[in-house]
Length: 60
Picture 1 (cartoon, rainbow, N blue to C red):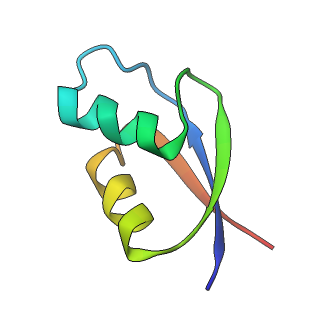
Picture 2: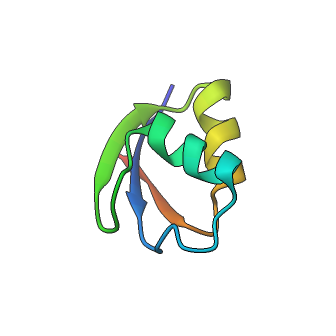
């Protein structure tokens, strides 16, 4: 299982309510904030819904 660093790179302005909920569930509340999570199916699903708002990197 890989570890992922997820950084919110775009504003939530224009995001749907579901996208905002996914960002909040990931722990992202503001632009340039980063969090780390394991690449579980749940996390990957949330990332997929907000992929245009975040940057994802694998942590080594």
